[in-house]
Image (cartoon, rainbow over the protein chains, first blue to last red):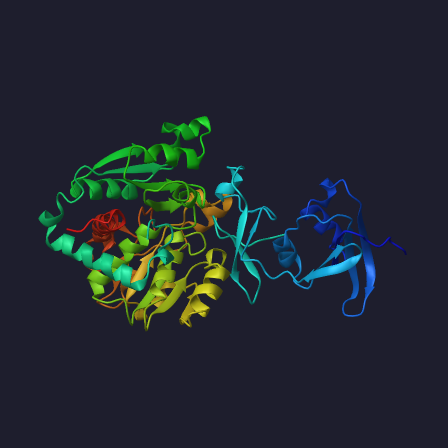
Length: 139
Length: 305
């Protein structure tokens, strides 16, 4: 399968296979007017299969979301056809408006204008908890 | 420290300081009678409460201050759909400190992030109730003279009982504390309390369904009510509400030095015959609640006697 190479844009690589579409929506790439390609189940030496997203524009990217979804993801920044930067997102301290608190007793269940903020409470187990009610983050 | 939202906001030293101030207030009430003159506390209670609201109000009045507020969401602009943040910002124009109870978890935190005056969480759903924990700690300190080397039994609804979670969190900081967690299977302490507080701090604990078996080793028995308002399913509440009822017979094997605490209100989980037993300290606990809240109000307002 051939997808055209990018002149100015981003390549989000090493996305766990099957997570590409989810990430496409979480990053709000569906709202972009530029070309976006999602490659599913691409062969990967390290993981067997992976998803890749190519964005044909140098957009501002929320690396926190990537770090939360899968820390193995990498982002290549392409300018004039050349890779000028490569980023490895780390586990973010907080994630805002990516996941929704599912606790019906949480204040966010009745006050929808509040930001949905989750805080990293345990690095080892990658545990995130709602800053309001401390419920566990559930995707 | 600007606010008190969670008991974990307080260091051991700050808890000791509050307990020490409360003890001094009990010993020398006149010294504190006017320290909060011209200060106002707003008690914003979105759900019913007898002890906590009256305790905050009595505390401020005994410090020489005054009280404004509401005691039900229906009496506030929340009934018109006003957000917690907007209500807090409005109240900030009138009061020096806020004590908020709300059925939704995190509401006092939201208030605290939107105002410059101190906010005290007076109970947010099944989540936190830090001034109840301070009340429990002052009571334990007054009865035992220490927080260390105690076997603390928690009995009843340990799943939804926020006071139990906060007490476990606070007492886990002290050396030699052991917990005996007595509950029906359905109302056991949540996993995160066990893993993130007890296991993390290497605190010994046992879980049991038998109050009688646990009784002989307890220094503190912390009884709780199975709370109807925490259940979505009435049938579950009815099935579990009478699991543990403390009677004189069940106390036969208890230590003479046992202290029986209860955050109140009780329904039927402690027989009224127990009230006469000198080991029952739950009404003393209510009074202690006022003193520790006096100490807390002073601390948050930066007032010294």
